[in-house]
Amino acid sequence: MSKSIEAKPKPPVAAIYARCGSPDKTVADEHVRLCRLKIKDSRWTVGDAYVDAGRVDTTIEARPELLKLLGDAERGIFSCVVAISPLALGGSAKRTTSEIIRRLEAVGVTVHFVETAA
Image (cartoon, rainbow, N blue to C red; front, top):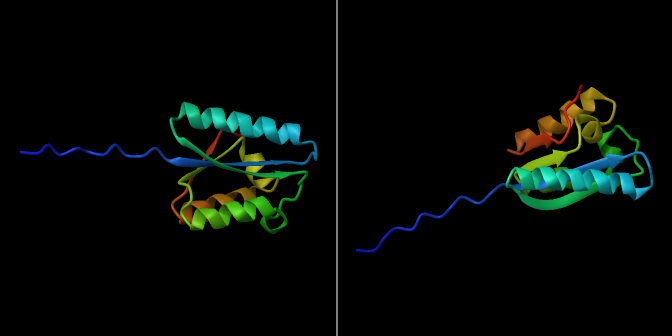
């Protein structure tokens, strides 16, 4: 009689989104580093990082890496997104943050933050 081997479920693949207004990539790089730590601490698989450095735009359309992230989410490339904070994800417009989260959740992608809003 052969034994049935159960496959362990794969950990979720987590994409990283970072946005900062400074063209100096060191701030964005630090955000990516902190997101990677959260992903590893959560025992998820680190996916691609989408970085809009030097972008103060609050509109979705003005951020090319965010648009790429949303497209990849629709294609099922990852199952969750990690950002440093809600402000980093959506900018100062809470409506934009809510819209991004709504679009991601509509395709089954969860959103997690390293920091939470105060």
